[in-house]
Amino acid sequence: MVEETPILEFSQVALSFGDAEVLKKIDLALEAGKFYTLLGPSGSGKSTILKLISGQLQADSGKIYFEGKVINDVPAEKRRVNTVFQNYSLFPNMNVYDNVAFGPRLKKLPEGEIKEKVKEMLALVKLAGFEKREITELSGGQQQRVAIARALANDPEVLLLDEPLSALDYKLRKDMQQELRNIQKRLGITFVFVTHDQEEALAMSDWIFVMNDGLIQQNGTPEDIYDEPINHFVADFIGETN
Ligand code: ADP
Ligand code: MG
Image 1 (tube, rainbow, N blue to C red):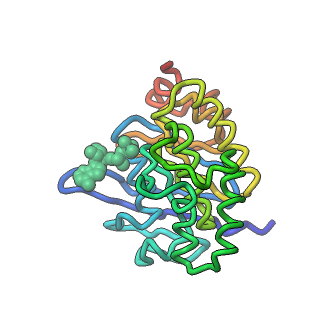
Image 2 (tube, rainbow, N blue to C red):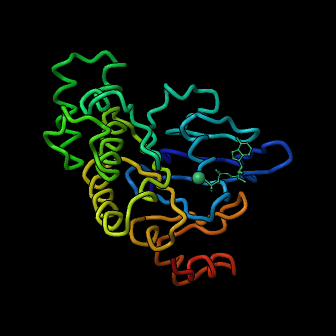
Image 3 (cartoon, helix red, strand yellow):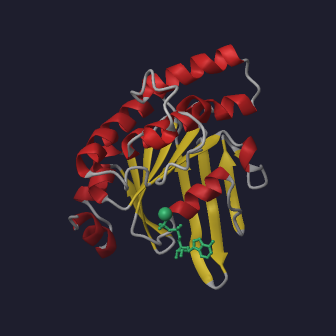
């Protein structure tokens, strides 16, 4: 059997801020087209991993590979990766259309093509017809949908989602969990989703990395992690209820 090259791979990746070792020689490998989750308490290093994937941060040591090639020195704008943040980070002074069109315009696509792309992306996040709406008129949930459409309009191969649902209320969060999963399946791209909510991770993921204190404590399917936690930390963390 031929092993496929992982879309993303970390080999012994470490990063410190001053004396604080935030990531301690992390190894991980992601297959294309799956829904991955980084699960762990606040401060465990989840966002740092996303920033290393997107190129916002540089590793002190170790190698990061994208489709088999080392990308440690590839600038962020040249990586086929986009991020959705908890606080949406939309341009509040632009309408929905201009927000979603932002990436395609940077690529200087013809405006007709951009219009099609925006339409397609808004339909995907169930905001068809919202082009002319102002960001400030939208609910939090709608703003997060626009942020997802804006990120996906760049045609990323990997979408990073940093606690994208944490600011939403319970019912909306449940709906969005299902929708994000559907979007990932529909597009067939790789998602790396970050959450501190074990229930969310178990419900959404093909594969979970449980993190604590700059280390991956365990990785496996939701079933593996739920049924056979490898140590006390994982057992306690998965067993907690919110
Ligand atoms: P998580 O996303 O899991 O909450 P982070 O990856 O944001 O964790 O942070 C991991 C650790 O690194 C935390 O202890 C945090 O305080 C520290 N940290 C993150 N960014 C910086 C920074 N720019 N300077 C100093 N410390 C940082
Ligand atoms: Mg974080």
